[in-house]
Amino acid sequence: MLVAPQNGRIVGSDEGPEGSQREPERRHARLLLEMADGTRSAYEWPPKQNESWGSEENLAIVRGRFAAGEVVSGFIDRSVIGREVRVRTGREDRYYGNAKRLLAAVGTHLNASLVLGEDMSLHDVVACASPGWDAKWKLPLSSITANCVGKNRWLHRQIEQSDPKVLLITSRTALGLFADSALGRLSTPLSQLPEKGGGREGLFFRVATEGLWWEREVAGVLARTRIVLAPHLSYNDNLIPHSYLTHQKWLEFQGINPDAADWLSAQVRAESNRPVVVPVVFGEGDVMVCLDSNQLWTALSERYPDAEAALRALWIDPLNLISGAIASELTRLGVGQTAGARLTRNAGPCTFCRNRWWTIGDGCDYGKPSE
Image (cartoon, rainbow, N blue to C red; front, side, top):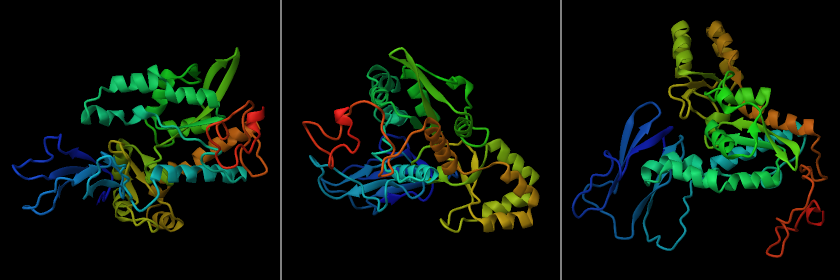
């Protein structure tokens, strides 16, 4: 398997001008990767010039955009016709792993033990991945959005039926897709919210601290659901404590504190052995300064106190910020907990866990089918 050394994307493959160069009588593939720092690397399979694949061997591309440590592609050495293929990466999927971390942080605020699938359900806005589909498979972005989000409204129907107390949406793109096709309106129109996601002046901080609600009429009564925004959960860097600087702000910081900027750029984080200064995923030159230990803060304060003060003013703990916003809304609404420390359910019947087709576990823990 090809594991990404840092954040980046595939810029050349079989369908790209800089990808595979097909040769007569030889089956092979070439991927061209562009890393976050601008460097490019080409990878070929098979690695030896005179080798070729057998008729049942293939290269599977797992993702077009990737974070450091994620699997980019894998070589399959036997036939996969009629079989389901899973890529084993040796670790838990980052999205679900970070969703668990976020829910655990909410539980810490509420002094409860919360679990995915019980207290937090996950919905995938299919059209979020469609910009890549448009180029790779020649599927029109407008058609995907119209069918998956607009015309059929699969996501919205599920949310409207389940009536969540808090709706966590990851990324501004997903919020836009939701808002365009949702019944009702946002309490603050999307056009009036910040374009940038990160930082104390960004979208995530503002929505978490000032609040955003999805408002609609249900049976003649105004219903409001709190929306909390988070950066994409697939990237671990999005959830670590950091000081966020836009590209322009980072240039200004380097101009005012050149020695401090050089010192920071040379440091690594003890726990992850990753750089302190990291580019923001899809951030177009924005950076995060990840001083996630007291030792680093102390060292910076002793060497460059002015730089330390500037970064302190920008510091954010995303996990605490987002989980705190969710927990405070649940507390404000008076959402209770069962004896098992799970969140109580909305009023009304539900037959999802026990019905004439299946029973999940022991059925419903909340007596919902009989309501």
